[in-house]
Image (cartoon, rainbow, N blue to C red; front, side, top):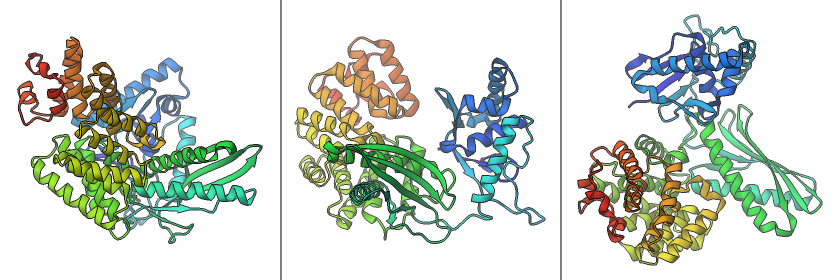
Length: 513
């Protein structure tokens, strides 16, 4: 389905495919869309939204009114009602289905439109929010869409520190964090400078020494809007400085990735989303592939091609492409070119290992992954590839330990699914079914559309006589994999080699679906 477009400059408008108008009639419903659309990641706390729209009403009445507003939005969405999403304590818009348009288009009289120009909600909390939002929009929204930058820019500012030793430590941490970010997603990293008006993320720090610890306040802001997106204070133990610096570096890198995704909601020019690259959703993977294709390969060709190879391989593993053999060969070509562009890139070597593993070239896969881990043992993609290669060679205890070590790395939070999968598969090969099931349950918490984990869960639950749980997994699998059947799962070409080896294909004769 084509993405919806939420326009907030001028009247609030929600437009579907074919210019279909999906905007709700109610003023407060349109106000809710404006609040959600302008929030980071297009998500807002329900309590916050309730206070903005119904601050003068009793809590129970306000809660009921908010439910009615959300119902009105959902009804207006029609077939696209899944674009309105919610979770524990929050509500928002699905970023894979809704595109935010903050382009300011001059009216017939040449005047620039106002943010949410049609909103007039008589609530003091909303009026304060709308005034601030309009002021921010005036400062940050350009009269017309700027020329897209091929890659986002990451600026590393000189740290402000109380003494030279603290300044050196802070500079080392910021420098390594920027480098790690550039190892994971295509970025242009440079000193604290950029062309006037050029969109950039600025990484800065204030550091001081207090007693036996170094205190580091790190900020990530957007330029030219000067909007602060992330700030965190770290305390580094002087007695264990190396470990403290490693942890701090990884957490800052994670912060950069989170900010990149957040800033993309107000600046679509900021490249590819790492969350899309490491997703298992067909639309998000396609979006990542398209974004990577447009990257300027003069800046980070190795990483760009490696990530494209990863996306294509994921599509093959998830059975999302009509021509898996053609797709995996394209992935192999990209992975090879990525290694040629940078023979010492741990990410390129690791992705090449995963591709070769799919092609049953176990020894080549092992050599590539081993080299990747030697170059950068903290690279979670390398750790995952090495664990997979060890499994393919029948070294299951080592595969389990390697995946476990990868999950212990702070950067694994960016994509824990492959490492959890590798641990689960190694545990099945070792006959530790109950522990394996726990790992595949964890995968589902992070990636409910991951198909292999659903296959494993269905088989493992059925093996321990949990037919209701097995049925739930099969139904979820059938939902994300059209055409799935137990007969197909039993066929020779279906990717269940680990289940077959473990004697776990009894599920295919269960008749549950």
